[in-house]
Image (cartoon, rainbow, N blue to C red):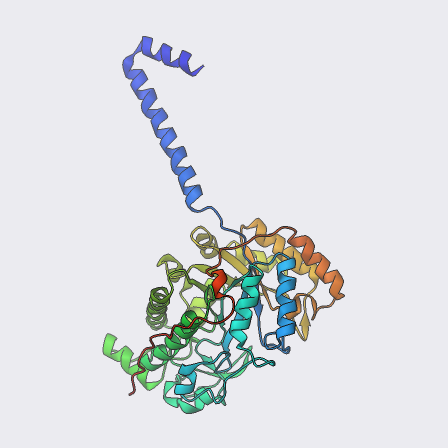
Length: 419
């Protein structure tokens, strides 16, 4: 048919044939362009992750319990774990930085005397799991921690001078993310983990941020005035004031990403913030800009909604849809807390909804997958097994020679300037 049409066009007018060929060429170029774009943004292996916490149980610290946990995750076809390595103002690994700065009175080890992080990485890699250590507390610290007590000059405050803040972790204070000493501290802690251990990346969550009402400490006020010739607005919601602080946080995250990549180019720079509108307005986290600037390799948005409708409403937000076209993207699903169990039917519905939206999943937290749950353990396990019947392996940045111990290289740390 095509040859017959071409012959007819040629007989009638070479000009008609030329127009036809131009149109055909345009159509082909559009189709090829679409195919190329589809290939460029093809979804990667589905993220099937879980956070390993210090909540209520000794799983991380007990070698036998950890062995069982990682083995179960492999058998249930999970592919990623996020083990906590920093919370409550303490490093959960031997940290020279923490000891030097006076907030690590003792080296935290497992119940059998093992290096907890090294054990997690070895167990995970032996079972083919990607392991991304998680800096849970970010700029947050308990007010009674050695970190907060040793460095009060690092704390930021509200306009009324108060420093304490109530959140899911209880009463905390906030390190000033704009202070060069705080930035050097966090960078050094992160570089220790990236350099000394064979993990596959590093993750920061919604606490790598600052609640919008903070930033009225003398250091930040002086910095703002030196750059804008104005005092900070008394309204913490002021758009200019919000953007200035969010931009400062973005600048630090950019520097942190560069430091991590310079030390280990293959490291996955993962972030797990709240949905964008809340993250930006309430916590100064402009994570969409981070994605657009290419400093995020993996995004897990915490969508801990109590019902399926509000859960799906967040999944269709343009920020998440834009991110999933660029990088591996998933949603955080709450599988339960000790005093707040979540029904497996709701969990299953959320997983299926996330998959329909072409998003991976990450569960908070391991013990609530099936041990702390309203249904019997074996029933709960059977439902998870049915949800992930086949493996979905991710790339992991380790070699067989890296199983037995942490890396031996010492990180080159930043000198922490003193006021």
